Amino acid sequence: MPNQPKTPVKGFRIPVDLYDAALAKAQSEGRTLTDVVREALHRYIDAD
Image 1 (spheres, one colour):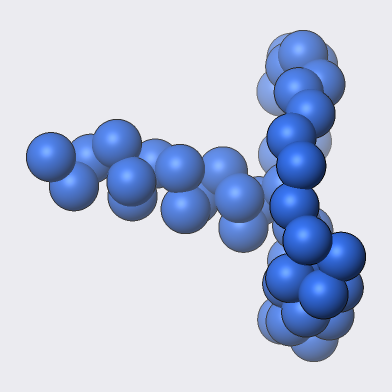
Image 2 (cartoon, helix red, strand yellow):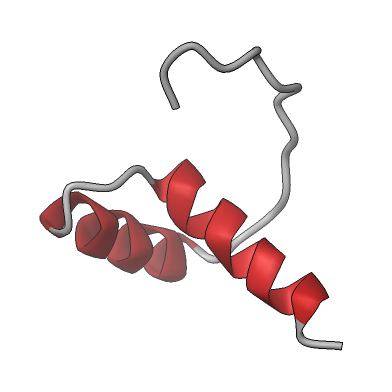
């Protein structure tokens, strides 16, 4: 997200195999893992 203000870095635990698979898929789609996680969290909170 160019020209966006920096957001705080957050941390969480995730199994290595899940992280590696998600990172590989994101990269194959030309996306960052941060963008994928952000989108998933938006979907999660909007699903209520």
